[in-house]
Image 1 (cartoon, rainbow, N blue to C red):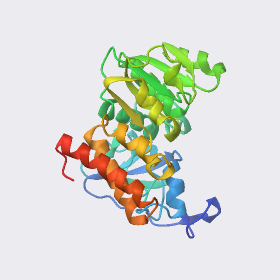
Image 2: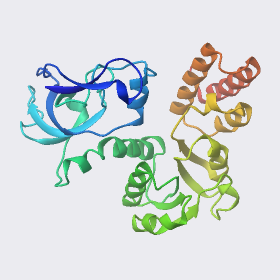
Image 3: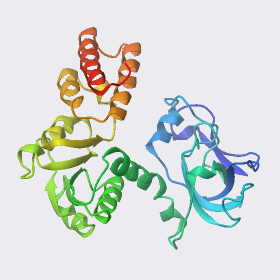
Length: 300
């Protein structure tokens, strides 16, 4: 089969099409004839060698047709989507004519969309679902703010949240996008700005915030939440990117979920090992996190 492989780590120029053996059938897995695959930012980091795990063939998602499935979980010829489960990281991924994925990470598709359009769905919608249902634990009737809602991720989250019965306020930097977001179900739109909490009437009454803008508005998002509300930043890299660690960690660790706290702990340890911030900042981080872990009964 043909596959896209790297000659070495680097930019797009290191990719080349080569012939390699098709993946063999394996229990608990299915071999998929790849019809299309999405491109993800994570794969850029993998290609550059900035990811700890990377397979010879990249690609963490695809859509296609089942070629073989030894366990019978999917019928041969079924239209499916596959994502994650080690694809592109610990097992050869979707940049190929065929790939093999764990059956736990494959889903049947019942749609007549073109393959290229179907390929844009799996990772985007799976990530949106995880943020909304697992991390924010959304509930019908809640008020949700999606910051940066015009991205593909934002639009997916908007449609999911509205379908789940939430009231959604969507933000964008471009007022010309208001109509688009309202058609997708947004109750109202706001211009995205660094100090949105000072302009939005519902400040301190918002149940949840999905923040797709980034580190610069993290504190502002926290300022908009009601007591007990939750926010889901899309990145934990703010710890290494901002000089205001003492302003970030102290308020953040009073409102985040234990799972997020453990992620912060991991990132802090990585930063400490790599000496990416001064000792004074590390002391603040250690103190803030230790207080959080003690309060939540999390092993430090």
